[in-house]
Image (cartoon, rainbow, N blue to C red; front, top):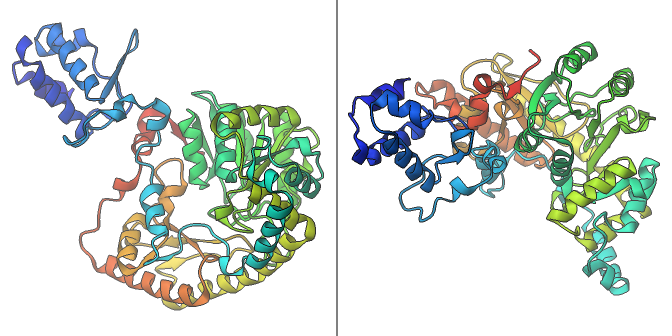
Length: 506
């Protein structure tokens, strides 16, 4: 081992454990020992360095005191954190759980921070046309509820959600209210499903490319991700993956998928449900975009085609009303809802009552349905504006894409030059931000893909943002020193091929 050989040259004695600790810390900082890797056993390292075991033991204890490693009886000592600045007064990272450290360095953090910067035009976060939100109706209903039902709106309620909203959702999906769990957005829904379904080491089939927040959530629970090609959507390939990996569950977005925009046909949906039934594999349907079509609506949901109770349906009001409402829901068999509710109770005993009651009345009165119809028209206008602006600004030799039939995104291919991460750095400097394609794969891939959200910006901002993107690409192409694209890719993904924590179907 290179690190051992270098340390051995220092000629340690029992009183020089601090130097050993310093060199091991440097090795961790430089990536010679990555997060999650095991340090050599104390006796083995002592023999290799020709020092006493006490020297190694004391060095390991110093590293553990600094929060960089953690020792387990009978298992060894593992790297659990990267070195922190000397000004950090306490080594908190070393005390964090393994699950939380799996999220260390996730790629969304920096981009999300830039995506809400008012100085930038954002094509990054998936957001509906908020200028068309029915604010007057929302305010009117909210005032009425505060007058009529202030205790219900402001008091504690059932962890499963306000009965009025559960009934309204149940009616929309032709199920019983006991099959509905209200959650604080689809993110909480995914977290609850991961906590209730995933044991460390379980294998999970996901869309590839797919929703990277879902990837992070499942990986934090200890899952090993298996990618199913989202664009091909080959059911024979999926069956081979099922037979090979025996996954705990399958998670897919069947309508206007994020990021590709693909929609499964009716036959594909039927075959997918039948595969799940045949192999007794739960099927999580993440379906936030199905109502945001431009022409014909998509086929029935996977949940609607399921007569054996294998499909769990996850949805949110973030894409059809507003992400700030933080309201979503899960439709599942009653016994599953009960377990999910128990898991939810540990984190948040109740979801905000006023928003639930307002949305329930908006659903019942037809306001949501009318608003969604208006959104379809506005989003189509914005999609067409972005398609036109991109085709005017970029030759096909630089950027290619297909216009989706619904949803919120364009999935674009850069033909050469910079990667998505490299281009995004240039774009931010020009005043526009998007999501690099690298983020949407469970392993290192998609380097020349980018996702552009067209729904959250006005036509004027779309035109200006595309012009800024054009300038950024021109600068990136002319630059001779592009930055290292790996710096925003989390360490667990960089090590995917080494530790086999992620698998691809390709």
